[in-house]
Image 1 (cartoon, one colour):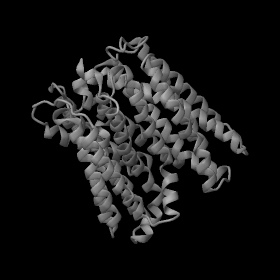
Image 2 (image 1 turned 90 degrees about the horizontal axis):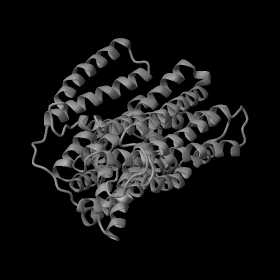
Image 3 (image 1 turned 90 degrees about the vertical axis):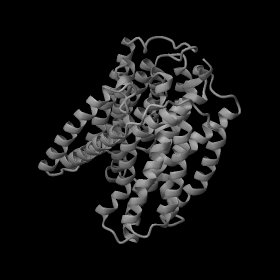
Image 4 (image 1 turned 180 degrees about the horizontal axis):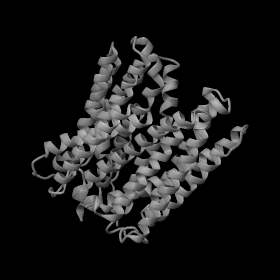
Length: 461
């Protein structure tokens, strides 16, 4: 029961600040590079198509290494993985700032992505060791709020930096913050007992192949890649994926946490997360096109109109986090996702000449609904897993988010290719449908033993 008590105040506060700093750097760096691609391509004398690898290299290395690093965290301790990830991310950020060619920048971005994966893979597992069971929802809410806000304000931060400095400063600014976070991690983060089970390097390699092929296949479908190439990738994904899953079924603590997916409430929470982040990404990518190309707002106005979404999350996530310590994630998440669905429908049908206020309150409704869903959902995933499998649960949480975002981005490209004239409005309608599906899946948790009624402080379940 000692592990359920968390760590004492004020160490708890310093620890969560370190977690927030690390996750802000990792998530923000995934968003800011998009804004700078044109400038980077021009300065490094590269094509626009080649410059996409500045983004893809980072996302790919994160996705393929999240679960292996989470599994390693269960074995050697979450603090070690988190601190090493922060240090690697910080050093790679300096490398990105000093890169003088696109291939060099892309290579260092791969390394930076591995560092970010170290941060993301175990951050929620660390939250579980920092907070006592009866306050876990509050810690998860802070984490979820930081992730959501960092994703949303990334383009705004990038635009602000680029307005006064060159693109290398987007990466150089990480270095002093990263150094402070590394020092704080060594001082404030708690340790957890590991185990001596040999690490499954073969499963780690197969995991990288499976998720790499999954990303390339989804992205290729969205961008109209040649059918033969897609079929080859899909076949490879199925074959390697089959062998990978069969191997995981023979493990007591599998790298791909199939043991956790056998817990109904955990599996439903993962499904809810994938659908919700897919809906969010569908909206995030399409809304700037709607605001600028259809409604005629400029870039500054577009940034201001997007702001109510993350601003509402800042208020909703802590409230839902507190409520999640007492009430079911199935209800809280379901109600929040209904609000998101309604907000997306209202945005899709706002009319041809809306006033800024008409857009702003709809955006705020979407953000409040998303914030109401995210904290309870993440808490449910963590508390449904045995404490010694917190790393696996944390890795799956990050993997679900990235998978949903990847699918959402690919769907935007596909929809814009099929119906270019009505792309933004159709995309928002699809986002609303996916959010509605996520709400239905969330309510399904009420039928499981882990998803009903009030949550007891003693067990966190």
